[in-house]
Amino acid sequence: MKAPPPQSALIRAMMRSFRWTMRLSRLQAWIVVCMAMIVTVFADWASGPVVSMTLGYLFVDILAAWTLRERAGILVAVVSIVLGSALNGFGSLPFADLQALSAPVLIWNTGTRAAGAIMIVLMVATLRHTLDGELWRASTDYLTRSLNGGAFRSQLERVAQIGRRRGSTLLLLYMDLDGFKAVNDRYGHAAGDVVLRRFADEARARMRPDDLFARLGGDEFCAFFAIERGVPPEQVAESLHARLSDALRSTGHAVTCSMGAVVIDAGATEDTERMIGLADEAMLEVKRNGKNAIRIAFDTPGTVRQAA
Image 1: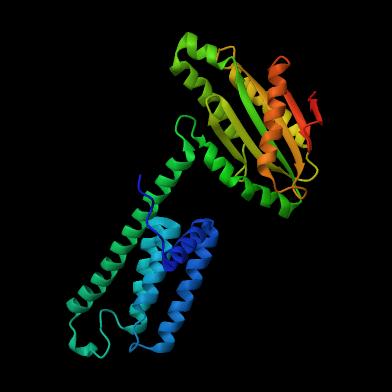
Image 2: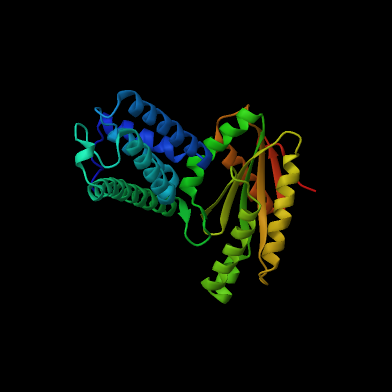
């Protein structure tokens, strides 16, 4: 497989800009778009009809289409045309005699401006939808609709940083399904897939927007939380284990969950891989001692106890 082509400094800068805009919430995107529109309209008013601000309006339209998708992009494009035309004359051109232009010509000119802007908006929105779809497929386990292992690891530091800013406690869970192979061997992979999806659906239903949940492969899963101050992380882990155990029982198969958990002060470490290792060790301890339970580690592998 050929290596990707080298990136120029300009392309790297553009990619950083795109990543920044893709992280904006919808409210943040609206704020940025509105501010860009205000700046463009002010510049258009200050410069008068002699200086064209088409590029400024086009930038606002593209920004709206990229961050807010096609409907908002079309709305912003129409608003851009209305505002720009109100300042500079509907359908007129700089230095043209407005009185010499007939109404049909003015309508045609304004309509073509709007159509051109909307076409660009639709192309940009289509590109964003395509990119989002590719990113989703690259980061998601198709069967369970959860994060895959690579995406999980790439986002660990983001959640850890959230925990550090809030002074939270970090909780990482490593889960393995007991008896899952027997379901596949006896009832087939379709039955096993139902168990995996039911387990993942229940876990994701308990997640908050900043929480992570992933299928690492086979019947192994991980979850990562930043727990608010005052909330015992052990209680969160035990509650989730109980919920997931109920979900597995509802499948009608003899499948249970062995869970290892590690609790770490968010401000005490930046080594997220170490947390995965600790949680994995705790889970393996459960597997060696009867399965279908939870063990919690605090900071070091030696500090492990079985949850009540």
